[in-house]
Image (cartoon, rainbow, N blue to C red):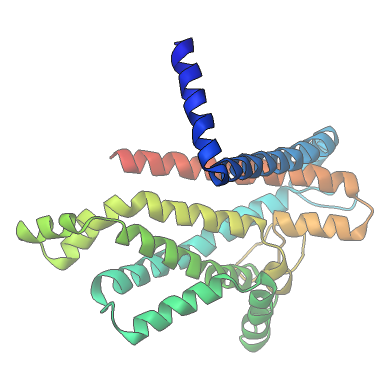
Amino acid sequence: MEKSKASALKQSWNTYKKRPGSLIMRILIILSIVVTVGVLLLLIGYILIHGIPNLKPSLFALHYNSSNMSMMPAIITTLYMTVLSLVMAVPVGIFSAIHLTEYAKQSSKLVKIIRVTTETLSGIPSIVYGLFGYILFVITLGWSYSLLAGAVTLAIMILPLIIRTTEEAILSVPDSYREGSFGLGAGKLATVFKIILPCAVPGILAGVILAIGRIVGESAALIFTAGTVAQVPGSLFASARTLSVHLYALLSEGLYTKEAYATAVVLLVLVIGINALSGFVAKKLATR
């Protein structure tokens, strides 16, 4: 065993001597991995070290006031916002991707324009979406600062992401599956919903997980649309703040830094928990 390892190392070293570029690339790759993992661990450690000692029961009171600075209304609002945004964006995104990949002509200029547009919209800063939602939903439609205005704005913001990830997931399904389904007499609609979509579920859910992470961590767009009222919204047209907006509000005031660190810990745990749950569901569906 030791001789085989030594010979393998010697062979690798001889290869690197002949091709020094390979050694340089390997070193750069290893350094990239170390830096990426190190930064991630540094951020998580910094948040946990400063946040965990400041966690206290009053931060989880149902009602917010200036003495407890409770984050519970913000947590509930975050869950509301996530569900509403996904309910509006996911069906539209999936059906749009199905049309682009299975029904539209791939050589069509319109399809190419739509794809370029979705890729462009994915890179637009969230503050631009916030200003758009503020002008359209808050002012023009008269919804004021509300849960609905924030959810619709976020749905528009994550729609390009869901379309592109779903489209790539559908395109990754082998054509032999389609041909086999058609050969057995299944129609186009049955093939899409019974063969293609079940195979593409892991990729689709990966896009949904990314969208959830963007919703939970979003603050700029929601300040202009959902507002910053620290209470559980009683209706779709009530103003409220999500957990990320709550964190921003605490830090901007400059008086509740400790509470802000504790909120960051909860936000981190919430994002990890949602991603873990989504990943578990994706694996179960993929197994089926």
